[in-house]
Length: 540
Image 1 (cartoon, rainbow, N blue to C red):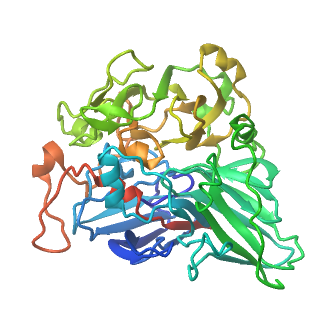
Image 2: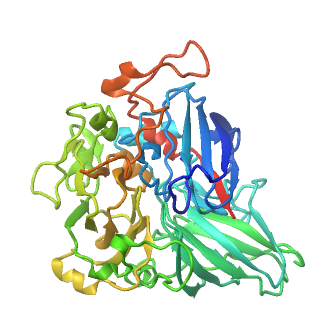
Image 3: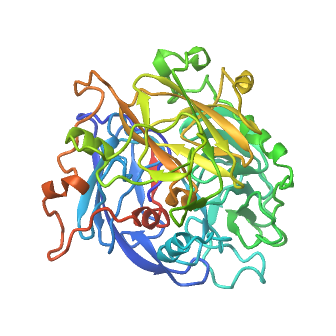
């Protein structure tokens, strides 16, 4: 999967265009000293740097040289009016092996540090574990920009692993853009001896606050200003360690890089900077995300629902309570659910089915609250209202921290607390300066409330970002259609749209190698992507 940070504006013909070719293939890497097959872009893991300027039109031609279907999705890029570029099975047919496809969009931001948990088993082995009802278990480590940990501990870390080094000059202030691209583990990020001044989360400026460490959950990104104000008697540790776990058992699940001053007097030594001590007191940990506020005086992109920044006074048109529970057995298989439904990807993507009058591809009957009925699998989606203002309650009755992501949108995080949400909980909502994000954490045994203005027509995925739960079906879609559509609020399908499912007969062969059979509807598609790779986008 390619992860991109911020927003997307509708492309304009007058804006400059930059083009990239991405060739997806398998390579063997050993970031933790164990050789394994991974997906790579142009032979690189992590993927290559895409250097663009704000308002550039970006065209990425993707060549699928794998032996299975491929999609690329772009978390945080809102794809205004254009869910045809969103890259999930509910909106796009997959790219068959030996075929290519052009993605076209216009983003605004970048990342610099990619952190994430890592398994030395490859993606097919991880899929097999989940399909057999097993848990993925503890990761084998944490990578920073695709590299293993610095050897801070001779027992835990093998000799000879490549590690990330950030070179800086004393007295200067640098912006660190950090994104958790892992599978399922929340991480705590910290730099030894340095304060992290939080300035931005997923494209929205925050009220600036200093932290000694900061939690970044799966799929989230944050930016920090860090001043090089230490005496450089040695280098300093950069640490990303597993959060909300028994650290004595999970000690190896730690990524370690090096911050190297140009006048450093020697290598770093000694213990890592301590992680937060509230592992058994998550009540305290929740204070950090609840304290993040939007900086309404800063320049830059801001959400502007219904022409007003006063989101707290806009009337809510629909409320959905989405309840997560631990995975359970459905039809003999372990599945994850939202409101008792484990999602089944449609054979024909939803909007493609609409425009071609394919019946029975999905159901517009996703319940607005949990129902007292037997859990089941279905292609059930939310019939959302165009230009509505929706309230979504994410109720996590699972035992794990979860991250939820909404494609095509950012949302106001207005409330977060422990226990079961009730209508009285609205009294605690932040109605003035809530931060806007596209991915939010939901604590186990707690809830998070978000508000979103549904002004982006299309079909948009709403899912848990923890990849094991997503693979097991914890997702749905919002179908947001303008009943008076005239071509101005939703783009037409691109000329190179792919057909599959009930429309497979309309698809012409576009393979870039001859003699290749076309594969449609591979149920294992997602976990191939999700375990694969990351590309870094830098925008000036």
